Amino acid sequence: MTTAGERRRAIVDAARRAGSVEVTALAARLGVAPETVRRDLRALEAHGLLRRTHGGAYPVESAGFETTLTSRAIQHVPEKRRIAAAAAGLTGDAETVFVDEGYTPHLIARNLPRDRPLTVVTASLTVAGALAETGTVSVLLLGGRVRGATLATVDHWATRMLAGFVIDLAFLGANGISRRHGLTTPDPAVAEVKRQAVAVSRRVVLAGVHTKFGAAGFCRFAEIRDVDVIVTDTGLPAAEAHRYALQGPQVVRA
Image 1: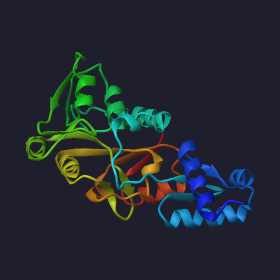
Image 2: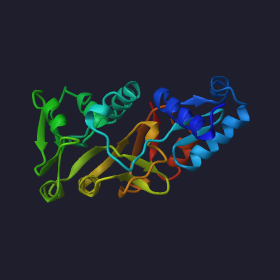
Image 3: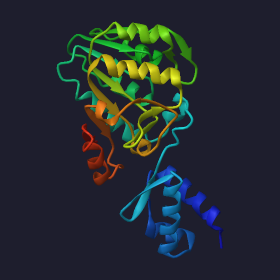
């Protein structure tokens, strides 16, 4: 029989691979009683590794460290594509748009309207590259130090440029989304760029997969109430989405 530690590691691994796990299936796979699995899930939730749902659980990303763009491009890709399409659909009549660094914002950029003039401000080299060849999108790339992990600019050059703008709509990402701790990211320099983007934007749309919810990183850059719309996937339970909506934003589960 496996130890509790081995069993719980297997549960976390399975949740991260599949996006969610069910008590009955885990009990059969691990050869233990469903109540043993429920105890394991309670323990894993207490350690911030999973969030329990009715009959199962889903994984919580660790917001304490930053993954690379390459790793983000292979995790939860179908969900991120749905999120990006739904988020881009909120562009409305915005003429100036900020697009954050990260894989999901990159997908949002690719889904932005191309049938009318649009000005996109971004710190992301990949976003700028994806839009630079379009005929209708004018791209303003923020200056500053380029971070290798995300290929995005940070520091005072970027924040000073942002401070001079008034932006209709900002599409933001976060490493952690928590009702208690707000929107967080591990790097203080990245947090400053995101914070400034929130400050100068008339509307803010936060896009993130369900695994980011409940996680908290080192640097808070905004509160939940600072966001107008949160776009996530159906892996976030409806009841949990409602709890976030009570703090102010509309929550869209794509």
